Figure 1 (spheres, one colour):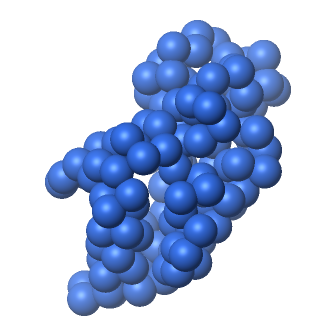
Figure 2: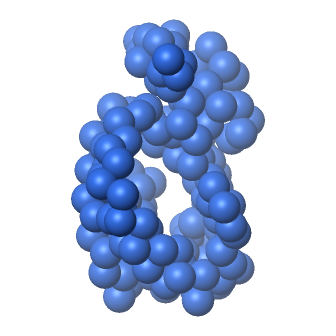
Length: 142
């Protein structure tokens, strides 16, 4: 499963996704901040939209929670907007649902507890992993 996660993150961040069919199920669905993407054509559109929106993207992965048919990546996402130059530095949790060895569904959160809960994992899973809940909570606006 860890190799699958590495391939998903690579496809999202590298801006080139020639191998999407060996990672994402044909019926793949992801819900973004402003739209949803479906199927292999959706994967291409999703990665293109990411590339267009973000001039720079960097993900630091802290933990991968493997719950069998569900995975949650916990990390930190840093990026800079393409047109605006606005920088984002936020915790991120990516919930993945796996079917037949392929990612069937994906959703990203800017809070680790929310990502764990979406995947049906207990909110106290962070303590079991030795991670601080504060590390995965988005900073409150000033």
